[in-house]
Image (cartoon, rainbow, N blue to C red; front, side, top):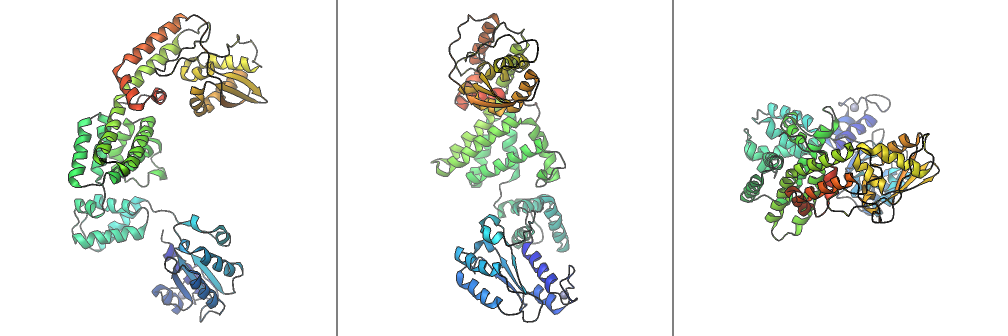
Length: 496
Ligand SMILES: [Zn+2]
């Protein structure tokens, strides 16, 4: 940000009369520097691309570019928001850029780089300006406030800084709007209302209610939003951003630039919430909220739509006991002695039990060579990770050079594709050499032909138990059969 200011500094550097040529250190006192600062230089023209975007304006510019500078070293055009030029205008400009007259310079500024034709970009040197982190904006606003003797809390300044989205100019103009309303003493609530912001307290309330599994709290929250006349879609979007921040807090190390938009004192408040959600929880939250945000556009009763979405978030957290249950099933199954035959049963309550389409032969003593032998060894090695083993048991293997192709039951393709790294590792350990692993969809598994082993019977019993569990019923209703996701989730740490 600060692109037009920088463009002017660059123009001064090119035209400063202090020395014999362009200088990295323009004096700021010579006529050229002064005129550029005041915007009145004959040789430095600033054009707003948004309003002067036609072919005609560019033609005038080209005409003028044929003449020498009136007084200064260069004739400079600064075109702000250059992406707003029409295609015709860009084409007209291109001719000048291809053969620029001597002593003519163009400086283009834009926030939407991708809208500029490649033909233009390829003839420019490009400099990217970074967004300014919220805490730096806050410090800047604090200085302004002190200079003007304005009483305002860090919290209020933080709101302005966040709303400015990395731009100093936006931050100052927003702050100006707030001051125009509130005078020398700024109250926190006024800032929220003036900027049309959703109060962060409400966002924290929503995520806390989800952690606590408190349905009543979210209904009260929506009631509060209704009283306040808030826009539900806007709230949903803000809530999405809030959960995104929780995800960042969860994943990014303290010093990461990803966290720069979150103020330190807010981090302290949000950190426990971030810890209470698992990564998988948060991804499901995004799913629910993104869908709600879309639905709200057309919803006949937006309030109900929002309530349902928030209740889903609350319910989601209540499903944790179910995840723990499945985890227990997995550990039991994984801890059992290796069965004589691969077990075809499946712990997932929804899917029919897939059976092995290729019974693995006993693993040879040396490093296995054939695809089937490698697969058998991989199944053996995956005993402690039954969730990885299941797809392998359904797989038809073949080797293509140093690639192990596994055609797994269609149900498992998505899961297996997401865990390719783990399968590569298993394959490497199984084969004693590095193998690439590719996953494809195989035939639908056939019925098991062997009588069930005691292990199978036990797992079938656990599966039935799992199905009767109320939380599981709830899960099936809530996620409409997408239970595979839930099974793969790790139980979240209990804290709030
Ligand atoms: Zn100068």
